[in-house]
Length: 282
Image (cartoon, rainbow, N blue to C red):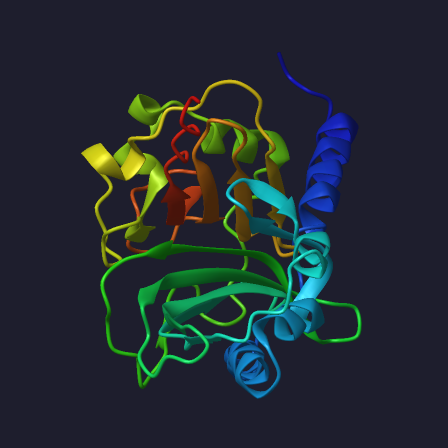
């Protein structure tokens, strides 16, 4: 069937108008530096005051933390008693969206109880940040895993394949993202994983495994799940968990030069923890 020219033009205009909502002011080099600086200031605040006060100051109003499933971040930290132990961390990798208004940071952490002179717990944290209307970075989601001690990084690796100002390849919306996030383990194929995929699991240092145990968690029962897509449409975060379920925090992005060809979201980082064991029966 031949479509009349006026209808074709109207359809093209509508598509361009829809796609324009995903275009944002291109990120500049300073945006990445500001993101890393916000993470370092967050860590410094925890050392100078307390972990509780630092989290309450850095969390966005709608932030999510994991205990072990996703819960409202500020309410969770307001309910915590003050801990005089020392929680330290430093970023070793980070990435920022094309629009410069969303990003993530991650790196090793260590915890030293009050009165002790050596840390007793170690792992990697992963934090998703969103720039607020006033230009300040706030934490949207925070998760982490435990593993053996590893040195703190001296430099921060910049992840991602989009150069500053590169537009998204194609807008893919929330429905497609949720479908990808909740896909059964067997349906998470190589075409859905980015070329620089990073996996964080308890008991393991961060690695790039995307086969077998990378997606070995089954989900059942009630879930608390959510997502956020950057205004530029090139980066997104999903999270989920619930009673008897694993908890996860994942970052997705548009395909980059190192990814398999095709449209759709690519899983860039997957932070997942197995469901905690049920309490013992009395």
